[in-house]
Length: 388
Ligand SMILES: *Cc1c(COP(=O)(O)O)cnc(C)c1O
Image (tube, rainbow, N blue to C red; front, side):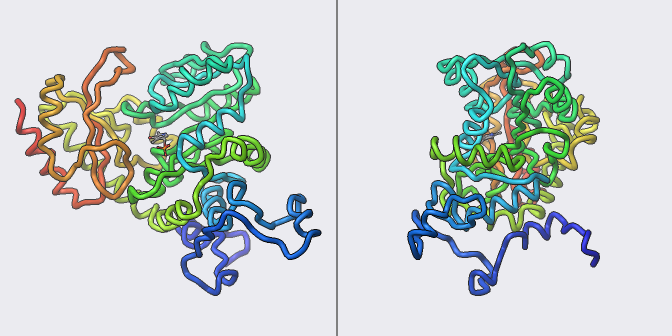
């Protein structure tokens, strides 16, 4: 093998940063479940914050188990560095606060994840930071919303509930020319299907609670970007806001990452099959899944993504609460619950503002899990048979 050959995605998941010899050859790394690290003498204690120092000192700052996770994710996202957090919202809040000060302005999308929306619409105004929400399906919408004091474009592609896409290279170019920072929530696509940083986006944020953890047993978040930005977020927002990733949570994510590529391939295949099945059912009005040929943004999806996850929504022709609840309540394999991205299938009935019509519509959001896909299709079919 030539020296220039970069390891593939799966190989990075299995091997990168797993220094087994440093841990008695253990195939799975140990969990460094300690708050503090001790030093042999005063001189090394005082040298611990030198730029060359590789010593750990305190787990709110960094931890060896967490560091393995951060190095793997940085490489998978084609970035220089990564910082792990105690939740996706911890990661998003730290990343956003690293970009703005009082008097600044943010542009984001209408369909951004609900709590992220609340950060922009309720918390940041208290500190003198204003946000404009745009649909985000054309670059002109961002351009028109930009003001002289705009410091951040925050995107989420595909977005929550309606799975709108934003043209990431166009967003990156628009922002870079105006010295505006860009952040993309890449939780839905994961680094398996999309790398926003390779398209010019400055920072990527993830809730690792979803696909990266993958087993519905951990809450965690990640921020990925260049060395300088991540170092600064680590020193300031992460240290001071303190949304630290617990080493056990980091270890569970490392376990999740070993199967991330094969899980995502199955979520992709089953999601596509279920979406195609729903799109042809007479009782379904719309299927919000960018992987379908008839989706208005299918071309953009093919340009900037390598596939779609198992997360999407659909809307019944009979758009009432009663019909929507009847279908969801009749499901046997899809449990009712928030979150997504785990091994198990989930469904949630949601009343949400359709970004196209600006009207409230009932949708059913599915997280297609790893069960036998025929069972999932049969389950949806028998549930749809409850209505006209
Ligand atoms: C769940 C979610 C988050 C927040 O992650 P937590 O780990 O729950 O804090 C952020 N973005 C998206 C798109 C999500 O679905």
